[in-house]
Image (cartoon, rainbow, N blue to C red; front, side):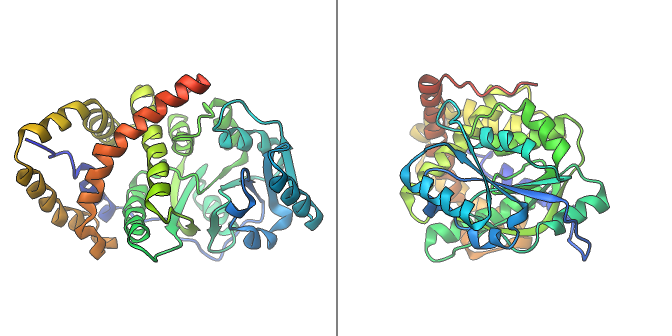
Length: 353
């Protein structure tokens, strides 16, 4: 029998009916620094107008002499009054987390916001820090929202993100690389333990915080982020995401069992159903009637809508087919990418503790 596993993740979002995100209030804290890694191409930096409003609180971190375009951009930013930290290029291709780690000592504030260059907060990050002060949080994940909605692949991603944010309400340690906020001392401790492996590196921050028994919350503070606009860029991004999922759930299977929910998600769903049973899934497709496969996917349409009723959308009518493509095709691409990185850069991606 194929795929009773297909809707496990979406069905888990029924738990969101029992959970509520933390809401911002009038209380803010100005004791924060925003660290933004910038590299490769200045055109990828979408939030510079937002950052200009908080210039004195921003650290832009990049690698030295990456290319002429970035060198010109760095000079321009410094002339505007930004603090730009140029660091020696870390080993390997994936170095975002290494830049964040090296930038941390240059901040003297109580809170740190890790913000991707293509992500734009809806308001002052100090509002998240204010909630953290009120609730004594060590780390906060926030509400990540795609900022475009023009074609079908952007629209289905918007639905996907909204469903994902429901899961963050009851699993706030599923931190996003687009934006997260933490106490400076806590993030310094976490990044000292971090593998500095890019794929899955954002969630690794939350995993390490959870393993260290830090207090983590999900704050309903919107941060708008760029998403792939075409199939090719979407496929490349998702292959990297599945590479990270493989690294965390298989290579670090012993590190991500953080409680009952992570036992279900990390072990039974991701490790067993997505990766270990991958050959059996393809075998099932070869021996069973395709109509049965389609019937099961149709069954998951009402399941998906019911479990994600808070963010219901007509795009959920096709979401099970979209998810099936990822599970069957992109899981293979993610595994292939992991071993490509392993061969080329000798990066295993094991968490240190």
